[in-house]
Amino acid sequence: MMFEDREDAGRRLARALERHRGADVVVLGLPRGGVPVAFEVARALRAPLDVLCVRKLGVPFQPELAAGAVGEDGVVVVNPDVVAAARLGPAELDALQRRGAAELEEQVRRWRGVAPRQPLSGRIALVVDDGIATGATARAACQVARAHGAARVVLAVPVAAHQAVTALSQIADEVVCLDQPAEFWAVGQAYRHFGQTSDAEVTALLQAATWPSAATVREQTRRRDVAIPVTGADRPLAGLLDLPPDPVGIVAFAHGSGSSRLSPRNQQVAQVLGAAGLGTLLMDLLTAREDGDRRLVFDIGFLADRLAGACRWLRQQPGCTQLPLGLFGASTGAAAALTAAGDPLLRVSAVVSRGGRPDLAEQLPRVHTPTLLLVGGRDTEVLRLNRLAQRQLPDASLVVVPGATHLFEEPGTLEQVAVLARDWFLAHLAPGDRHGTAAG
Image: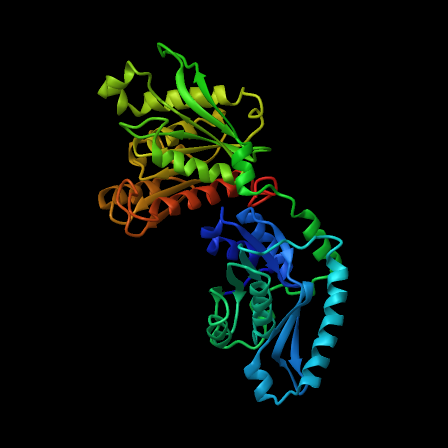
């Protein structure tokens, strides 16, 4: 696996750490090279970013072999087996600690004016570096994080030597590593661009890490019930409009037959999108009187017109007028979303279909909107129909969620849908900021 640079590695690593989003996590970059990687992870997870100031105490005749480590606030970790094997006496160990403490003091002086130390007591310490060769520094970092009171220590790196990962799995509670090459002699071999990270770059990244936490976004999200006037309806359509602070885009949901704006599955997906800085509109496509007419429930052209009318209304709402627009459709709602996306005046930037029926959409070859088709691996007939539709769509990707049936009721499958949808919308609605600095 080859990474373009540390930022690319961080974005890829963040996707492997998505399950930690929303938890009480502190992302700890190891200066200097680990900080650009950690920045992307922290931004994606909406977690605070910090540097882990640590100095390993290398055995004098074999510096890569750590006899222990020192960390901030007087934390000292000693590896007694190494001390005994290296035959280090109390005086030699004391000299190592004093030298390590002096080097650590310089590191602390350099960074703490920029980023005050994040308390780790009772929290998840997510230790991030740009790669691991021998693992001595990573081992010391994990030990220091635990000594600072972390309830759980997770070590995450883009690339590492296999033997180092095996050894570090005994130190950290969890090790996440994207690649363990068979022949590995230096971290830089996994990067196309692996220049030295400067103090100024680390400082800039620490200062830029000011996004709100996922919990803060949820608290600040402005959710309100809305009434959407559309042509031909006997009354306005009921909807739920959620706008996080400084949204990077907005996604309108089109539910399937027999569902509504209150669909728990769509609401779960909408919550994940909202945590990433995307506004969402969940709505009923039919009024209460119309809902009893089974012909309308499956009239894709009619539903697409309703969806388009709601999107035109949405573009007129305060805070929404200039936002890129995405559509999320489920089942027959996906056909309505694709049909609506075919209207160039609507300016739809991306579509996601969950267990959808794109085969029912009108004029698929005319839909040039980037489309993600998400289908359960056990939803065999719908999967077949989506594969046929993919061939007709000019710009479509198909992702099969293993083990999932049509409604994605199996454990973890809907969560996968939400993450895939979020990443698709962020990539196409906010392409200049892959994870959204305002959004995390």
